[in-house]
Image (cartoon, rainbow, N blue to C red):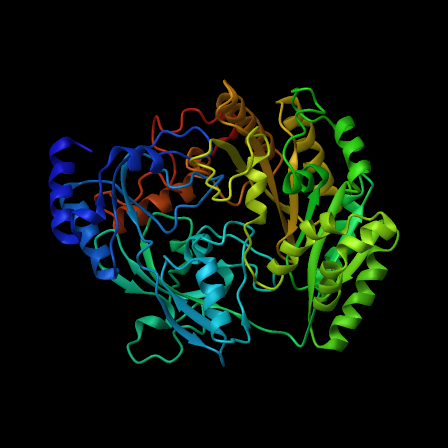
Length: 549
């Protein structure tokens, strides 16, 4: 990032894109350099290309001038680093590449650019009366579909494995060359969007969680609307009841009865989703300890564990799945409720009179289940984003922006086997560790596949409170250390923890060889998902770096 090289690059980028699409204003750069936790990388400028050809030329200029560049899609990678680069560099903001290029109703796929958001795709399908459903994450509707897919994000429906349901990538390499993956590289192909592997070695996997290329186009598979859909919600009041639930659900995931991702959140997670920290009740003291949480749980009728999932298929298939689920969870949960469109409408219509007659606050229940119900049908929601304001003492704004508003958020997402013993071991360790460090142990255990679960652990705080950034960082590092030692590595890293990529030396050498071949000048997202160089990420505890003999 020497002065002459950057100055020369900025001059060429302005000539290419126009001055209005090369952002150099200090306020905008400060905002882009701000995440929901302490970071180090600084944004030197923001480029806003309009198409793939612009991206290619931007990359070529970066190569000539030896300037590091970091691509972002929407930049809403909250909890993992937002728009902040791993090291100082220039952002390539792909938001203007926002075309939906093709929709195939018969073969159930859509081809999109990286600027396409969850809201845009869902609205596109709705306006065309499409019989296809997308899969959505619980993040903002303004998040990029391609960006989340490349981070190997996951959602709620049977298409919840986003990276596993995408193919036909168009990629700008670090040299500026463009390649198409899979069958897409054949000019006359009719199968480009239909298969992940193509012919010969597959490149798709190298482009997720990597710094080997900039994806400018992707085909995403969609789900035909089923004949019948029902959501299910369950509650367990037993603090140590999660293991039995997971052991009961695993066979139904393995045999295909349950096809959706199943999310199970603890009481802290549910409370944060519906309210902010009870400052008055706690007299300003943090954290909300387990005794206080147990009292709130009884008052608000929240379970110690609260789960959701979906049943999809014909009416007969859903009826049989419902019966199997009831049998599997009998004696293991305190409530099991099935919800369809009709019941949801009735609850919404009669919420107020029902509360008067029965005392049951249906409105609070709807606040919890309605957004999840929509997600199980591929409808994105802003509801989950409110939980990021858990420790803030100000009201949640209508235009939520966690970076701007000083929300503290760090996500740690270990992968573990789908067994009761593993989830019990992990959740107990996490609960104790976070409370010891002064944070509420908000957790969601998601049965993401038939065999593995992902536990999303939230470290939530107020960045404006003195010392909280440092305490949150210490908690995160302690958490990562114990999880890696116990065999539960994360499925995803934030921009300040890329040092955890260091591990097996042979794997590191292979990655370095590929990187040097594709990016000889090292200009594309240096430090992102690559083995740490000497002196990099010195804040990562050395205990997590295995010794290779």
